[in-house]
Image 1 (cartoon, helix red, strand yellow):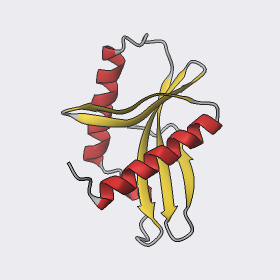
Image 2: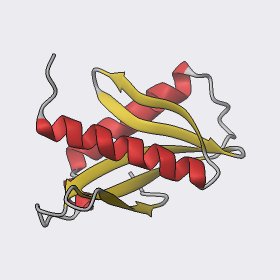
Image 3: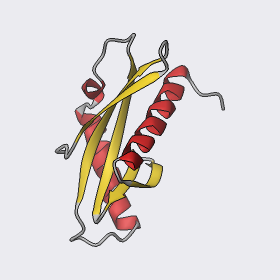
Image 4: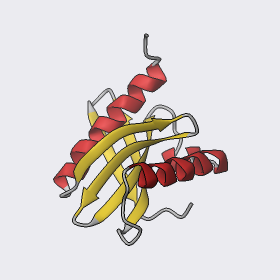
Length: 123
């Protein structure tokens, strides 16, 4: 299956965020946890905290802000996927977790990426 340019850009953004998280002391547990009702881009942990990371990537050329792509339907699907993950992996109820939004700005002309993380997004 051939990936669309949008999917390729998204994959690059996810890879950039994984590297960013690892530099910040996180350990990536899983990527692209997919169920038919939703997907979690990255699941990482630091200490006892689990971070469910939604990655939004844009190129500088678009002029869009990545966080503008977090619409209510996406948040609902993400919430359902997180609940499923917690049950599937038998995560203890007392273990802390949060949802983070990683905004990635790619500039293909300079081959640089900027990452901004909005921590503890409320679903």
